[in-house]
Amino acid sequence: MKATHYTLLLLLGYATAATAQSVAIDPGAEWYEEHWLYDGLTAHHSVFTCLADGDTVIAGNLCTRIRQVGVDSVSSLGSSTPPVAVPLDRYLGAIRVDEAARRWYVTLAGYPGELLLYDFNLEVGGTTLGTYGDCGTGLTVTSVDELMLGGEWRQRWHLDMPGRFVIEGIGTNAGLFGQLCQLFEEFSCLHVYREPEATLVVDGCGALSTSLPEIHDEAPLTLAPNPTTGVVRVAGVPTGASVEIRDGAGRVVRRSVTTTKDGQLDLGALAPGLYTLRIGERMTKLVKE
Image 1 (cartoon, one colour):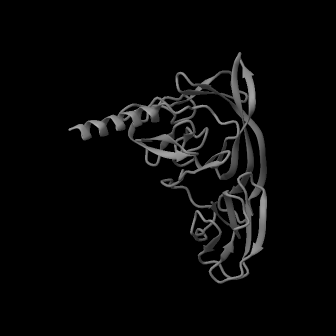
Image 2 (cartoon, helix red, strand yellow):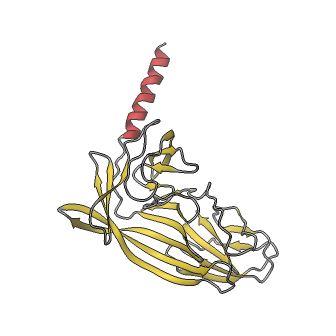
Image 3 (tube, one colour):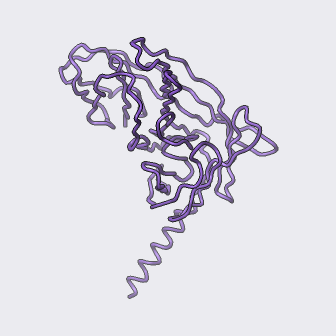
């Protein structure tokens, strides 16, 4: 009985400690994201990083500026014309953190007022709050687990929309501002969240599906292993295929050709992070650990 009581106290103490995690934004925080937008026959596929970009004061409140850096690939559905790469480097808005209430508020560039972005006071059976986006409110928490980041545990609340979850002090699997319905016309996902000396790989698109036609009919690239610490194999790629690798900001960090019949690439020289691998018109995500 004593052992059971002691175990219960440990569990209660652990749960209390978990819910007390700060929701402050690390000044060096980076969100590596991907976004798709279908507007009629125009398709946008953006790969970018959201960066904490210093402090600003809005309506007397201290906020964290958020900047977006990356590339938007714009193409026409059904066309053989290669996508046009449009650089992204812009201020998106600013987030105000209310530590006492465990909430994030956002003032978007060009928007007249402040919006509730996240309420991190969540429990099983409760519903999410957040007025930004199409699906930011009213989702029910179905289960809770935890993720390790930089030696500290962050709670993760799974929601009753397939593949959706919220991570304490980080945001949603659909990205920092990803309060969007991941359905047919617009969806986004978070791949990696990073703070100085701490990285969390997030399978933000793990359950993503769309009924829209694909822009290209070629089979998707298959990588193994992914994440990788060095060597990765790309299935179905012939020797001599052109390879381009871009970092999370859309910058080309490597161009080469495959030298083996299984498309083996040695990425040991790349810094840890999220990359986009492109071979011909096919692209996929790659995480270097």
